[in-house]
Length: 407
Image 1 (cartoon, rainbow, N blue to C red):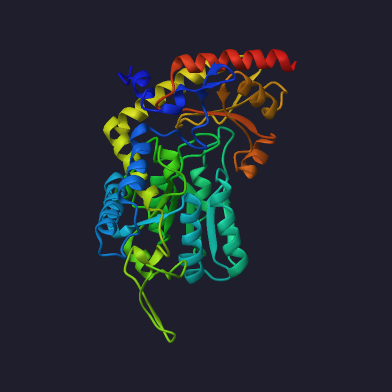
Image 2 (image 1 turned 45 degrees about the vertical axis):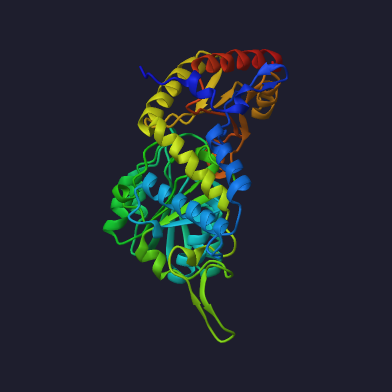
């Protein structure tokens, strides 16, 4: 048993004290976005109250303070994911922009007609559509790693898909819909043995498990701040220096240049080559506060406690009559996607909301995955370290009540 004190931690999150429809908020929509601790909220207030200024452009006091805080945030991210140097950390709006940056720079430069890109059946639309767009522009082809009925990638099928035409692999570390933890280290090792670079969509991984990009040896890794208790509108693209150096800029404008003339522009050094315009300075500072908060808790402690919640929640949910859990992988993060009898996910979610319980319903931006299971979507309860077993008990009772009302 974990000694994790979730009740104490909950006091750090002001929004968790809310009541919805007269009932205490039970927030199980963490895969969509996590709530923010007071430390993150305070960091945003402090920035706008005390050091608000643009970065890299002024010699005055506030600009220097803002620049120092912004670059300190980059180093915090570097340490959190164990990148080799801060130059490998590019601030973006989120995972989606990070993937699009890679597809539009590395992809356009290196892929041609007849080349192949591999993704999996488990992917979020954000790790499907950018590669489809790249294929439309280059004539490359998209190939899909199949999964089994438990929602697990079939690794042997992945190996069969890899040919001398395969030029890029991009997969989710953890499925947002099912919680499946993919065998990304094996995928990376096998791809690298065939000289194929690999990108990881880390949006659902960075908050649940320790990330060490050097140990993983991934070539690119993207995640979003709001998934790990930070602000919205800020995220990170990690890339190995050798790839980032060779990639063209993604956007043009201020801060990504060294010199501009009407004849020629010289681009800035890493990582600024990819950070055109005024960045989300407050967001980066808030993200650093969030990462420090999680680091203080200990990501291993978080993972252990969330696994306890997952085990407890799965057992309790399966006690409900006509319960069907979608996604039963042997290796899972704290996501329980389910259907109850023939009731529609939206109807269940709406009734749960009336009882103060926030869940996500629908296809979760994974429509091909839902088509694989031949279902219209699921109700998804995604758990975080501030959730409790008592809240899971409330969810079970609420689902049973909804089930009765929808018969």
